[in-house]
Image (tube, rainbow, N blue to C red):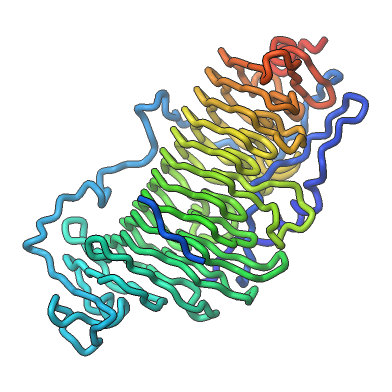
Length: 503
């Protein structure tokens, strides 16, 4: 199934993301946007363990019923009641299939008579089976076409201390090294995926792909690296881990994986797109990719249901570093715009305790879609540093497309961002913001001096409470921007933004 993000928004974004200039103290704030769109048709390393603001025109976006977001870091959206990594398995009752490069696909699959291919093991595996894979290099694709149960999941895992490498050559028929469609209660862990490259803009190489109405899938402790697209224009795409909810997908866990050095084109390293609910993306390392690190997406036309947006999930404890479109041939001449963590059209997402360093944009909560909102996103306790554009970014793509509602930024440490001096600041507030709370954060400047850069805001839609604004170095004068007015103090900026007292 080649359901991919539309290229429409990427083409518009490419034309709009021009350098932001400061002319006669007037700042033109252009949309940040996370930089990831996919085409509709779509050296391995060893892993170690300022005048009076006017009221903006807001699109006619339907307002849903009020929902209470988390109120502290003890609350999250993901429901662990059927989490596969909480299940205690009795190994003595399980069935076992062994795979080795010395095996044969006519063998029984016992320890003494292993099968040769992972695909053969997948065909034989039923509920309650563990597939043990011996060290070696194996060819994908692997199609997993059987399901387990909560108490008897199907497990694909490397044997203890074994380096199991999955590789292959992608094609229009076989774009994924592991493909899971319409299956449930499957665990993939401890495997390495690499050297899966294409030169075709009709192919989207993906290490692990989940689609259909799959549920209860656990993807953990895998190493995904050095794969992707070698297409040299805006039509190239690739993913590391992709969950595409063409039908309702639920109960997805993507934990403790290392995903790095991917050539993604217009796509993302880890993505959940479409009708996906109840997920966690926790404790992953997502590094050195040439587009977005972690992306939660809605409203791209992926789902064949009314709920075409990913929702009710947690993004906790990830390390996300150096994800940037700089050098990506799909973004020639564009300003850096890849989000380390990006929620674009998602709802009820809890983003906590992540370390996000050296990306184009640190964490972005936005929407790129006409009359569509990103809603109820709680961003707490994250450390965001050294972004080339903005540390945190919130708001719709432009005045007519997209918006956000009921967003909370609390207790984040945001330091030394806007290193490219594009006036993204430590916090960039974009368009069509409904109910944004900014409290208990520490914002420390970079040499650009900009702390908060904002488009004109509605009175009462944005609140500021107990934030700290620090210069670096200590004698640096700081700047806040609201529309076409620049302020040298947080009090004057906040009074203008909230009370419309703009002196």
